[in-house]
Amino acid sequence: MSEIETKIICITCPVGCSLVVTHEDQKVIKVEGNQCRKGIDYAQNELRDPRRMVTTTVKVKRGLHPLVPVYTSAPIPKPLIFELIKKLRGVELEAPVKVGQAILKDFLGTGVDVLAARDLPQVGQKTSETGSG
Amino acid sequence: MSLDRVKPIYDVVVIGSGPGGLGAAIAAKKNGADDVLIIERDNELGGILVQCIHNGFGVEIFKEDLPGPLYAHRFIQEANSLGVEVLSDTMVLDITPLRKITAVGKRAGFVELEARAIVLAMGCRERTRAQIRIPGTRPAGIYTAGTAQRFVNVEGYMPGNRFVILGSGDIGMIMARRLTLEGAKVERVLEIMPFLTGLTRNYVQCLLDYNIPLQLRHTVSRILGNYRVEAVEAVEVDENWNPIPGTEEIIPCDTLLLSVGLIPENELSRKAGVILDPITGGPVVDESMQTSVSGIFAAGNVVHVYDLVDWVTEAGFLAGKSAAKFAVEMKKGLSRKVKLVAGANVRYIVPQYLDSESLAESDQRIQLRVVRPIEEKVWVEVTDGEHLITRKLERYVRPGEIVTIKIPKKAYDEVQKTDKLIVRVAKS
Image 1 (tube, rainbow over the protein chains, first blue to last red):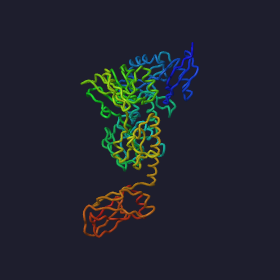
Image 2: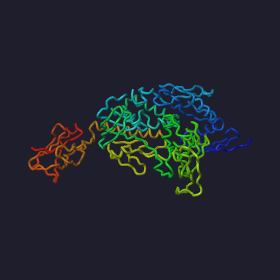
Image 3: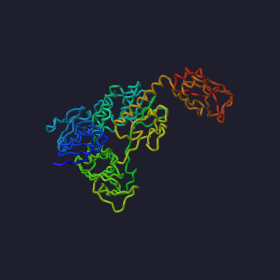
Image 4: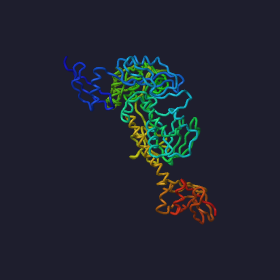
């Protein structure tokens, strides 16, 4: 197999370096355009197994809001994003929800958990998030 | 930390509890301010971070990639543990240049209080359709991207099914991804500029990842639909942003989101007499984030619109630290402004304020005019409200003639104890 150049934009940080990755299939031979080491790792991962952090919301009964934001504890494989969203659509929690509370554990064996991104008090309940309590 | 009673005076009052306000309150506490109060109009702290559920926050400050609500949570916890007081559900109506604050709230009712220092952290607002003058009908289904974000991420409503997004700012791109994940179809993102206006990483992870097309040098030239948006007309523009005839394209959709810029929110700053920069739309500040009004500081998007929330937090830290320093110095009696108040039969006094340290150097001469003539001997008296500080006998007073009185150096100690001097003209 011959060497190919692929252009990838690194999303590790807000700089957003434009990388030119020379690779043979999934084997990286050379990365250019990166400003730090993270760019090389990103290029490698992006070719072999592109992953993304996923943030969304799940339903909550009797909460200050009807939804609580959640996030993946680590990036998950891109092809699994919609599956995760679908799975979380079926989840309904009961307030109060605590920050860091596991909503879903070890999603499809990836070792990635889905965690609550904030405290969500019950309606009328006072917590630090509502600025009192 | 619930606030049943508002104190009459605080060292530092912070207006707004987004990242700038939280940072300012925390830094004020850490730098020696005793009483720090946040006034927040929403029913919870965090400002816009509450609805920014996407990750990407904290890379600078925590070296971690956090969702917005979690980033806010850390600062809310810290503010709590430091004993920052909070008045939520409360809208500030007015701020005077002398740092008197008037507010009204659900729980607190009508509130009047004073601050030794204020940090303005009101953030910014989105530009709307009216500000970019899109022609066409005025149906339902046109939202700013941030409004749609609030609906989708906090309140649980989907504002439509088929979207066109105008503007390639970060909020627009992030909403394109968010709506796609929630099952909507995002037909197009249009950008009038020849370049992306948001971060490149958002182009990758929000648009490219989900095959959402971006068209640069394009805008919406018309909105179609009577009751609900039925389509928008997109058009290519030339270098002067003029539509190029013949490039019009009708894109069927039911919702148009506008992500077309943010404007610092400075109604209160104006009331406080703060000078605004015509370019940024925010207060003119010095290196300590102090505005043109002494003791009033500003931090975050109220000053200018930042790219990264981490930088807003850092601006908050600086403004809060400076505000605490100002308040502490004021309490020590250093360089404090004492108000000269027009009492009985006094129309006005110049100067309006006296620096409390000014008497350390020399007597201070003040001038005033009376309201009514008195054609007999009268005392012009300066008091602190209770005690006489100095007085002068005049043979008569007339509105047409300025009256001058000296506040003597020896009044220095008494002036240190008050924040106002009342001048009145009374018959002897």
